[in-house]
Image (cartoon, rainbow, N blue to C red; front, side, top):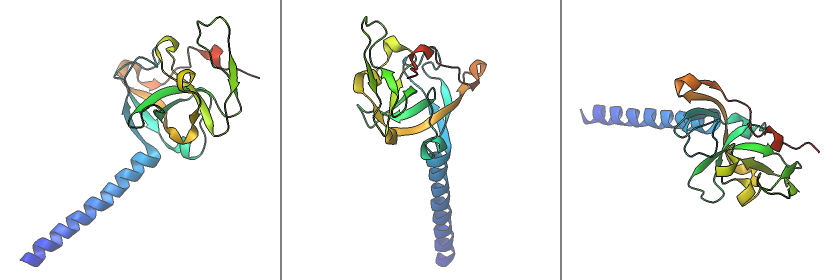
Length: 166
């Protein structure tokens, strides 16, 4: 009797550990569902929108200009932020705010990306904390899941003029 109960308990624990490992690998390497908060990505992503984020791009260094990414916040490592990639390493980027009369430019250092929110007037981004290390990228947002009337792939940046070509 005791042997039977112990056998079932260890079998249950073994399956739990196996499925836990599978779930961890799926969320770490494949992707997951993310609820976005804050106004920095409006009008593309609104507060409480639900999106799908895939993680393979960051592992294979396939992040491109214009992609929207989930990143560990440089200011608070316990939280994630959602921003658009404006520049990759070696790119020339505009580091000033849209309202600034004199525009300043800089180059993104090796191993970093330049991130900005689509809502430039209400976004804390690389213009505040500088280039972000590539290693802080958690995933790339593929499409919006909720609200259903917005379901689908994300639209292009409303700030396309911020993408500089040398």
